[in-house]
Each structure stands twice: as structure tokens, then as C-alpha cells.
Image 1 (cartoon, rainbow over the protein chains, first blue to last red):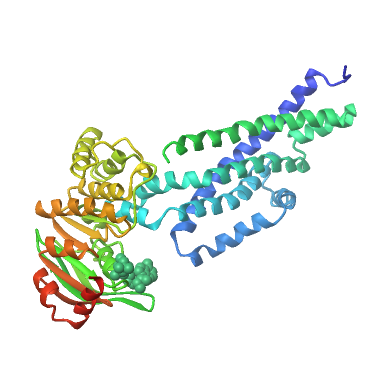
Image 2: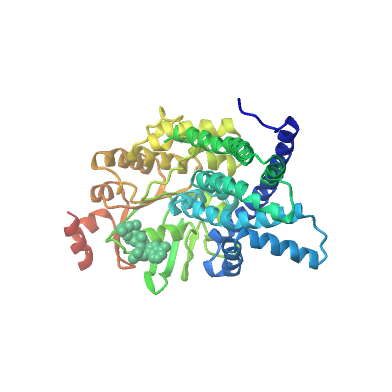
Length: 217
Length: 240
Ligand SMILES: Nc1ncnc2c1ncn2[C@@H]1O[C@H](COP(=O)(O)OP(=O)(O)OP(=O)(O)O)[C@@H](O)[C@H]1O
Ligand SMILES: [Mg+2]
């Protein structure tokens, strides 16, 4: 049989890391999605030139490697004396990073709603807000969901980079155990398995919702 | 009454409406015919304020559509419009498509809204489709649903924009029959149409649009029998 010094406590240690990964992902995706919704609706509703500054900033978040953003943000908040913990800094950076992608997903999905459908809604007397909540969001959600799930899973994996700020998330916990136990393959297998178990429900949720919608087509 | 006075409208450099004057009385049915790009659809979208205008004014029951002080959401309740392209709300059932506006805009209760919706859907021959999603409907059924959806708001005016032009020929009849029924019931209607027989049989007056100008208007017998305008005669001979 396979021999290992890996103990139940080590597994708990890794699960704790997984909890941190999950927490960071949750805050980043929640914050990023809310911002992405606001920015995306704005982008889809006003003339393109009016959102140019916003687009520029979001492009920066999309093009600068996340690791550099994390380290710069952490250094900046220290210099500025914000006194934010690495965890908070990480959540904010990742949320902005997520919002940059989410904005484009939302804008694209809103643009995919045919003009005539929206005109039909408005011509029935629905207000702009009612058109948005009753017609545009439900229709756009179907378009956006696959990309949004991809984004969420991506952010969960990218969140491993916060270990550079000294945060003990899943990958960092694994590293510590690897150094101590010298069983890299075994521990990485477990880490990979945990990542998979975190991602799986999210991926399934998408499939589940889409199947429900398909029945109407 | 719909009063259109000297309406001008451009998209960028393209002048689409060049001074339209038209008054439609209560209970009147006016058909609008004319070549592609002559501004027929644009005029309809101006009437319910979906498009701004550059000059002139449009009054609906004395309310100026494009005045700043006008509550468009309120005004639109009494102007139903059905578009050329299919425009069902795909995520809602046929019944929900029809009850949405009465519930959200008029604040009607579910039961009352559904009663009205079922009545309207039965009226257009869709009584057996209320639980179905629009993607399961034929083109003709989708257009009839759109008509029922507009009628569920009990509008005083109905605007129809070539509601049969996207349909297979065998489905055109059922939709036109629906429009006829409505006209016979005394609804005030403006129908943009390519169906000359329909225009002739149903309209009180027929208007011919030519490149952003209303070149001629008159009773169907006159337009189809002895059109004064050269362009009208040319157009009619081309569609026959
Ligand atoms: N939103 C828009 N932006 C720019 N140009 C437009 C827009 N809507 C219409 N146009 C142009 O305005 C002109 C008139 O269009 P309109 O749809 O009113 O014509 P129509 O008489 O309804 O033609 P058809 O019989 O083909 O439906 C066309 O040249 C069209 O390309
Ligand atoms: Mg048209």
C-alpha cells in the first residue's frame, strides 16, 4: 500500500486554505459582478464616448498581470497608510479584475437583446427600469451565464496568486505541506481534487439552469 | 385623434421624413403604402415617441408626444404598436407576454390581467396556446400574440407596421383577418402595409409615401382607381 506521513490534521490544514480560497473568490466574484453589472449597464445605455475613461481603466485591469496588480496594490496601500490586511487588499484587487471582465460580458449580453424586443416593451408603457428588469436582464442572463461561469472558475484559480501577499489559501497550504512532507505528487493531487470539488457545483449550476431554459425553446 | 403636423426627421444626414401632415380621426382606419425606405416605419415610431423628431409636432388626443412635459410611459398605454419583425418576449409564456404590461404598467392583479389576456388571446385564435413559449409558435401566431399583447392594454389607437411582411404567404390571411376584425370593431388604426387588397377593403383612407413625403392621400377607390400622383400610379402598377 501507499505509505504517507500525511495526517488528518494536514487535510484539515488544506481545507482551511480551501476555505480562504472560497472566501476570496466569493468576495471577488460578488463585488466584481455587482460592479460589472453597473458598468455593463452603463456601457450598454449611453453613447460609447461617454464611458471611454471607464473603458480605459478596466482595460488596465484586464491587461496588467494579476500578480503585478496584487503586489502594487499591497505596496500602495501600505505606503498610503490604509492599514488594510492582505486579505482585504486581495479581495478588492480581484473584485476589480473580475469587474473588468464582467463589464464586457454584461454589455455584450445586453447588446444581444434585439432592439425591436426592447421597443416592444417600451411601447407597452414599460419604463426603462421595468424594461431592464423584466425583459433585458432575463434575456441577457441566458447569454451571459456561460461566460460568467467561466469567469468565476477562472477567478477561483487565479486567486492562488494571493499567496504572494502571504495569504494561506489552498495552494499556499499545499506548498507548506510539500516542504514539510516531501510528497509533492500526493499533496498536489489532493489540492487539485479540492479545487475540482469547489468548481464542480458552480459548473453544474450553469448546466442545470441552461437545461431548464432549453425546455422553452 | 392623432394629429401629425409638418413632421421632419433625419437619421444623421439622411432625411427620412420631410414634412408629414396627417390627421387620423377616432374610429378611422388609415393604410400607409409606399416603397421601401420611404419612412413609413419611422413615422409610426415617432407617433409613440420611440423616435424623436427634428421639426413639427405630433398630438395624440391633444397631448404633444415630443413635449418635454409629456409622460411618454403613460401616453404609450393608449397607443398599441405591432412591429414588422417578431418581437415576442422569448423567456415568457404566451400568457405572461400578454399579462406583463397590464400587471406592471397598470398595476392590475394577476387574476384580472389573466382574464383579459385569455379573452384577447381567444379573440386572435390562440386560446389553446396560453401556456406555450413563443418559440413554439408559428410566425403568424407570434404576430397574433403581439396583437393580443397590445390590445390587452385596451389602447385607443393601434399602429401596425407591415405585420405580415415576415410571414409565409399561407399565414398572411389569418393575421389580416385579425386586423379586419379589429377595424370592424371600430378601432382607430394606422396600418403600414404591402397588402393592397387589405388596404383597399379595410381602409377609410390610403396614404402613399414617397421618399419621406406623403405624396397622396385619399379614399381607397381614388388611390387605387384614379390616383392623381404619377409616383402613386407607378408604385401601384409595380406591386400589382
Ligand atoms: N435607426 C436608424 N438609424 C439610421 N437610419 C435609419 C434608422 N431607421 C431607419 N433608417 C433609415 O431611414 C429610412 C426610412 O426607413 P423606414 O424604416 O422608415 O422605411 P420604410 O418606409 O418603413 O421601409 P420598408 O418598407 O422597407 O419597411 C431608410 O433609409 C432606413 O435605412
Ligand atoms: Mg418599414
